[in-house]
Image (cartoon, rainbow, N blue to C red; front, side):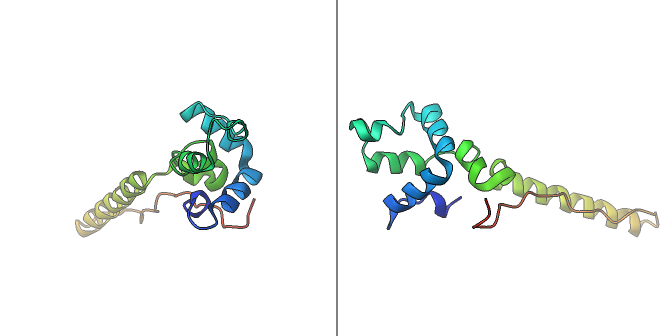
Length: 121
């Protein structure tokens, strides 16, 4: 989602494309988090710069994040690290049981969602 929400060079075009593809999600998040509507851009209540700032700062797990990233949007970096820790603990327990002469199945890593490949959707 990172590149999709940047408003640097080509920001207006990028924002236009984002709205074109995910307008309902953008509208929903703008209303939910900022009490702003897309039409406020045309009434002069919101500038293009403000709209860019709002969209750029939308939370990853909002409607737009889910529209762009799928189920990976709710998987924050912190959750990824916690999942890594859980995997390591499972491996540690497996090794400890095997070292003590016990039988154990090799643990499978916890499934992590992957963001969609750009161009999908």
